[in-house]
Amino acid sequence: MKQIKPFVLISSILVLFSACQSRQQSQEQASRKLKVSNTPVPEWSKDAVIYEVNIRQYTPEGTFNAFAQHLPRLKELGVDILWLMPIYPIGEKNRKGSLGSYYSIKDYKGINPEYGTLEDFKALVQKAHEMDMKIILDWVANHTAWDHPWINQHPDWYSKNEEGDIIPPVEDWTDVADLDYSNPNLREAMIDAMTYWVREADIDGFRCDVAGMVPVDFWESARAALDSIKPVWMLAEDEAEISLLDNAFNANYGWELHHIMNDVAKGDKNALDVAAYFQKTDTLYPKGSWPMQFTSNHDENSWNGTAPERLGNALKTMAALTFTVEGMPLIYSGQEVGMDKRLRFFDKDTIEWKESDMTPFYQTLIKLKKENPALWNGTAGGDLQIITTNAPENIFAFVREKENNLVIAVFNLSDKSVSLFAENGPKGVFTEIFSNGQMEWPAKGILLQPWDFKIYIRK
Image (cartoon, rainbow, N blue to C red):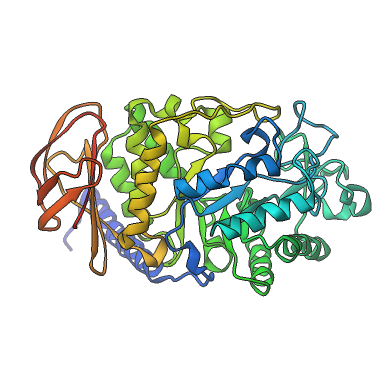
């Protein structure tokens, strides 16, 4: 009998195992690619841009009425969905700072008196609706303040340690108490509170804090209850639990791309990492759902630095990237005027409003998205197809196409000048949106300065 040498046998086994594993991964990817989200998608969200509103810091008064004076400006900017950070009364027990965390809530059906009254809020919603903008509320279903009435009325609705003491969800979150969703009465009360705002104030949906820390089946029940009143739009602060997008949420957070953009700006990653992200997400998201893409938000601004601080010379590059890739772009309060200030999280710290070239810049990007269905959200938009170039480590180039609409985007994600030669992609003459210059594609020798970008449309 012929003897097989051990290393040959081991190599054969490894090759066979690798082949089986690759086949299994391909089957899993194909299965995910075919998966379709059953979450209803409001028609008005298909080309929407979202804007996060920090009521506390938006004006010196920090009220609904003072913020309402900015609605005409936001309408002119072009945003559609106004996401209001939590508007509810804030807990006083174990409070952090002088004003406390927005996310430490002691009454789910109340209004923070610092912001105004329920009637003030309803007037704000009505005024936004009259201007064809939508209002979504920040919802914190995972935990409450320590002086929420449920603590004494329903202690069985909370998570406890072995000694029977109610505990925070995370050790450092000392100002909040963790809710236990194994209790059906808690679930009923939470859904009742969410539907209250849709019925009473006619809001249009929710952004849900740490959504992945709450059971998926709760969110699915909540979504069904909300949609029975009116069509809503739902955003999950989560990226790991993709099943949240199956029946409950329309979008989640593009945290990974956000961190990649920060690392690219620092020189720790490059265009290949951006391309790898989109190759992965192409099979990850259920069809009809999408990520929210962003360069900043309330957490990033306060805890990790402003967008100018983190992105430096790549600031506009990364902002433009979030508006052209798959997903819904976010603008955080003050970004449209180039705010370079870390807002304090637990204390008053008013945004400084000023004139800035970031305002017309964002207006151009929003107009671009609105006028080009290829850039719309979910199935309303076109798939992202990567264009092969001569400098894949430096340049991220792609095309998105929907029916007869086509957009080409080219980004130099480096601090070096690069001459671009495209090896594939659309053919024809295209117009660059910022310079209005014309270019024939496939590109042959476009000079891109450090952090330069070009966005082309066919007129």
